Image (cartoon, rainbow, N blue to C red):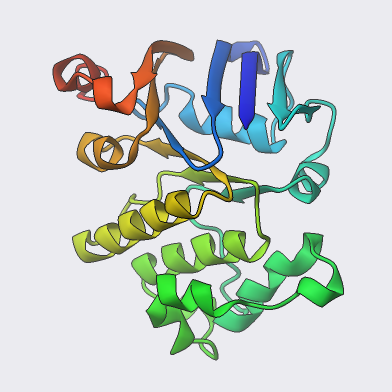
Length: 231
């Protein structure tokens, strides 16, 4: 289980996060919603260790990750799919997947067939360079690369951004499948209400660096949430 307690984060003199707290449980999906620029990505960067925090703690399964660097958090089982995907464009699909091996012992460095069941298109493109894939295919590759590391916590930053509807549905089905396996906690940042509502076991809505609404996904009131999503 992930517990984020009262995180404060600054960029220079500007405060991006104010006492933000969220949780994510194994076998469940927590969705963080909000407009662009309200601090959603900053929260994820704080959790995975890409941005230092000024107060608060990040705890995974009872271990305080706050003092750890990003690569040390990855070794603890934190996997991150950033906004914009950030796959390696000159590496092949196979080579991109193999970069996820870094935290695993040599005996476990195998790309499982389960990944190709989730994202069949990748199996037929193993020899193609990542930069030659469409945006939706790159997003599937980025998620698969994170899963290669066998994470305990999967952190996804707007996986539907700029993706065609058919692949959004594929990604939604894959995330639902991962929840059903019960092996990881999933924290998903999203600004599309319908996608989040279908997946969320719990949710938090952000505005100006703070959590302004939170609760169980089943209790999410569309009108209350949408007023923090519309421009």
